[in-house]
Image (cartoon, rainbow, N blue to C red):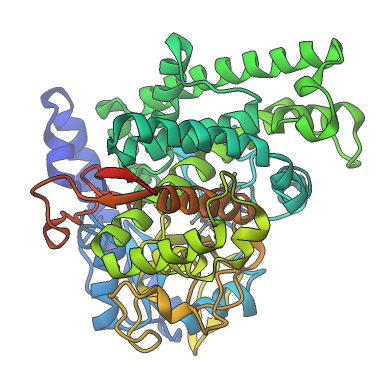
Length: 514
Ligand code: HEM
């Protein structure tokens, strides 16, 4: 996604070649002259070390197809705080837990902003959601809705039956087929759970289901896309030529249509006083948001676009990430039969043949929690965390200017040899007698981020993944398909800014006890 070739993009369309050439030369000239004017202002600044950069694109060419890995390699050379340029935009890359603490704790208010993304703003109602909302009153309101009304422990608890029903269907499918594509199955499971929790029902079958599935895939792809125009505005026109702008418009329009229908359906039910089948605990996210909107209980008006934007946040933040965590956990367990064995022994002993796994059972499963932590340390689904500085500030003696984009590389931090023993090895045991947690207080493990912008979805993630994994490993024994050895598993990651394995995880299940 990041490894594009600027010259081929510029000159691939013959009819635009001459315009492109003029723009290119004008921009290049301006770029070359600019340092002459700005040098005087910057000479007294103490800036972090920087790799040499190219005209126009800066260091973009160094990001490669796996930015978290390329940034790790660069940080080994230039240090845990380094300055890159994406086009002309300065980017501070943070690759140590100390640096992350400075950004996300000591100076959290200064870095509580997100960098702008034209595509994500188009899809998420011009930042009326939570994840892109500029830090301020509006963000605070969206955040409180998410933390207290949608994703609180109490609300997550209220959806236990949904999780149990979906997991039970998932287990039936495994029982029927035995030889399964676990990647696909985890995608369907996490989508179905979030659909029922957020929208009140599943959208996985029939034409409507197909349409929604396609739209969701487009949304996730587009939100994560690297938009060259955000960093080199004079090249923004490329998106028109490649069709990216048109695709963004089309997907935003279709999603809006879909969400309008969902909201209308919920309104009609509310008017008929049959919300979610009765009882406060059965309300889905749309019900809760419409009630807040109607009753103005929070002391501010919640706009129609904010309701739809928040729903999309739940899908963008909630589906892909949760499925990736489950997939990586199973990949690592299949590659490490010793760890799988310890986990199965723990879970089976606690479950003790009961059909259901309770919250009290999960509480006792320490190795299960250690497996999930170790998976998130090695494979944080969102490896690089974006922030933006709103003031000039000194970090570790370096001057960081207002408007600098900051990338905290959670992936590199999770594999820092100064912090972790054998950092590239999968060893859940390291967390058994350790107080290190991923709650945003321990900066050596920040898969959910930290500070004001920390992920609000952690309670629902843990409630879902612990229950799924406990079921999957206690009720079945697992092996790789015949002929595939654990050491030969292809661990190549997909290109892009999330960490996903390229090939699907196929595995064979045998019921336990057999
Ligand atoms: C394994 C699963 C997940 C992981 C690893 C994850 C990770 C993250 C990370 C790293 C951030 C940025 C934090 C920062 O900048 O400090 C974030 C933000 C966010 N996440 Fe998650 N997330 C997960 C699941 C979820 C779920 C299930 C939801 C909702 C249903 C969700 C909703 C959000 C939202 C709304 C934000 C933006 C918060 C803000 O800007 O104030 N996430 N997540």
